[in-house]
Length: 309
Image (tube, rainbow, N blue to C red; front, top):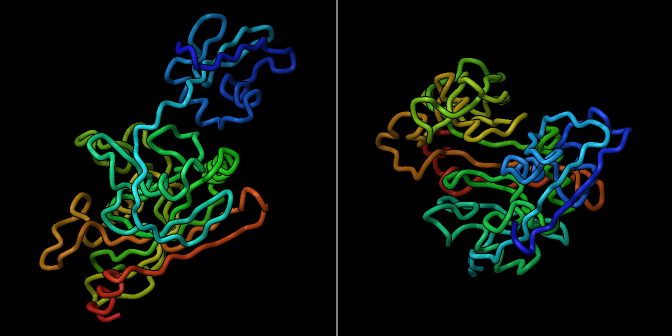
């Protein structure tokens, strides 16, 4: 335990007998999200009667519980003056239309040129700290080669609100994609759990052991020369690579997706043809529903013209 870590100690009251460990701590520490507390618990930072406790542990009256919350580390990620396509901004949120080949947050081997580097320059110290020093303000992300809109939080209150909406599946997320092979049905729903592929841990797969439920609703916007389809996908859940994995699982991989599809052949693309078009949510400050849209990027529009939309 560091000298700057915060130590929280509680005696479980009688009216909390039988409560889940993570829920009890989330109720007591209202400045931290339940997901963040669960993360700390998985790191072994929570104990009950002197023993490490899992989030699902049922507490009993008079149990002695302790949680250690680490201090924010010195930020190792540097601000960079990177141009940002800002769709909307206020004191709580900033919405960005992300371009291709931009990683959302730093990761091993890539600590510069990310969206977070640009946000640190633009927002200075005005980003929520819930997700730590490498992902300040980041509530959700999109893949490096996926374009489109995402929301970033400037304070912990906004972050907690958006994280809860994501968990409860109340955020509107509509994507547009070009997929291979002509779809016979104009709309449908894919309800298949997604988890790590046992054959390749860098990939995701459907119907694997310990996979989490994933639901994607899709509809055809236009049939393109009977080889490709321009589709809209609305996410009910938000699993890693969900649209890419789901569409590939029914025989319609995204154009340009060489991870879950086949070679893109003569068409030169930089990754999958996928764009986060619409994002809607209840504003954490005003309580009003707001919806934002990012126009299709030039490369996407060019493909639609090429294929004769």
